[in-house]
Amino acid sequence: MTTLKNDIQLQFVQMVWEYYGEHGRDLPWRHTTDPYRILVSEIMLQQTQVDRVKVKYTEFLKRFPNIQTLADASIADVLAVWSGLGYNRRALYLKKTAEIIVDKYDGIVPRDRVLLHSFPGIGSNTAGAILAYSFNDPVVFIETNIRRVFLHHFFSDQVAIDDKEIIPLIEQTLPDERAREWYWALMDYGTYLAITVVNPNQRSKHYNKQSKFEGSRRQLRGILLRELADGSKSFARLRAISPEFTEDMLQKVLADLETEGFIVRVGRSYQLA
Image (tube, rainbow, N blue to C red; front, side, top):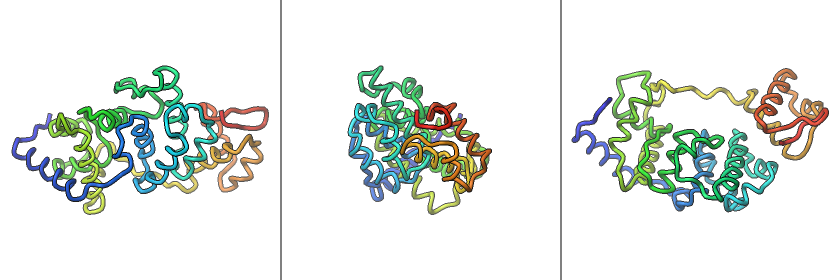
């Protein structure tokens, strides 16, 4: 396990705090400790840029101000508000999670990493982020910007770095009392590095360059979910509105959405589940 020398650790921590003190961002989800609102922000921020999320976050919470309203909403309403963020399955996972929390936990987001991880669309790191930002719990998690910071400063001459090598360093630098702010500071400094140095994340073992969106199955999924949010559609109609995709791809994506429980087939038509 990699261990930081005390002087190196102190210098690194001081540098990150100083950057945050001068350049820390004012983001709407940093003005709340409501676990529901943190949950919404963390799901939205998965694979989506902050500037796009800021607008949708406010709009989403205006429409669904608490977990009960989200649990009670129709899938069509949720997808309509989500439209523009992409990765629509996140919206469906978020709604399903809201339903589970209302049904099994009296509408209270559990302060338990294992339980959070068991909910749809919430991985261990997202669960950790929810605990840190909602409750200031000093839990260790890693995401793109945090990974970038540690790779840049402590693994500059190495490649194929496993997150298991980074996590001990996160743990060593994580304060017991200011976990929430420390992660904000790391996130903001990581965002700064993203525009000032060659992407350190390319040296991560877990690095995957995002595939092209145009003409992808991901794009087709979004088109289909938006269309079905307006009501039931026949296969012929779905084929007509997506002529740039092959019929074989359309059939496979519809089958995937049906298997995942997002849509159902009724006769020759499809509709949201």
